[in-house]
Length: 395
Ligand code: C5P
Image (cartoon, rainbow, N blue to C red; front, side):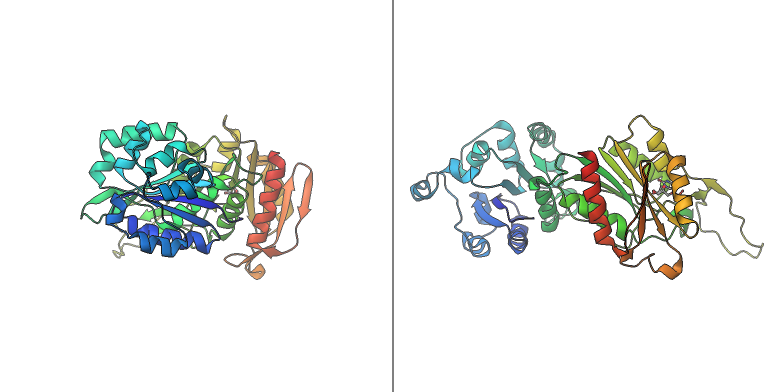
């Protein structure tokens, strides 16, 4: 993505120190940062350190005539591609929701015509307070974008929601907000990774899946500007930055997460869902008690792909995967019809191919128009080519 101009408003909270790292990360990725400090923020970070990291002047005061001579507040707020508020304190959120403009930060937020992304950060009680939740609703209705807060331990010693999102999470959300690729404004759902079906609290059954291809597809869709909901089982590879992440364990949870993520313009089902679960998973660890081997009774899992295709919220384009070890094309073409999806990405996952867990893939794309054989290439390249085809199909 080409470098963007970010106006970063740093509020007065303990998480302000993380904004120093945020500035570094943004600059590493080619973005430029114009920093604005509220008065309270200067109690937590110094203008000198902020300006040194940003390589730019720090703006602090609305009535600084020098600043007005150099760049007025209206211009300052509009020269940016995106305004980021991190940390967004309860006070700043309240000012934004009420439309106050009584200092430089709040005035810039009122004057801007650019997207605004806030990364809230505050004590858990302040976050949960009815006033903050009311302000949040107002801000969401006004089209303000949010990233976090996350759940965890806080500087004040309490635990809960209120921790500012990590700098790279903010970078991901911000890049998604300013990306104007061909999938801008599209919502795409991606399932990825295996599911784990518990046998007892310590054992499970699962398909082999690193989650690498699903993650690469989500990244490629993000880079074309899509909003991506990424529903993933316990995969080996990390989920990409910038997706709406839903972590699940079982097929039943994946089905529920998929249903609540709909509607979507397209859905890509790259997850290796276990076909069976235990009819009755044990509450306690099954012991070797000398009475012979345990008998495991299976029950069939819901077919998530087939149920979405049969449902009334079927996205315009649905892509399934078929990992086969024999008669790849015939099996995959039959699967496309049986499940009712538009395209099937078929691949041979026999151990001799090295595809399972590897960095390359060798696929055939099957649609109603026939089979398109792609040369063997990296999973990232498969993802990029698939994302480009999806963009073309959605028009
Ligand atoms: O039937 P099979 O598992 O080979 O089908 C593979 C395709 O169906 C993949 O796209 C996979 O994500 C999806 N699937 C699903 N729910 C299941 C089983 C498979 O969504 N229970």
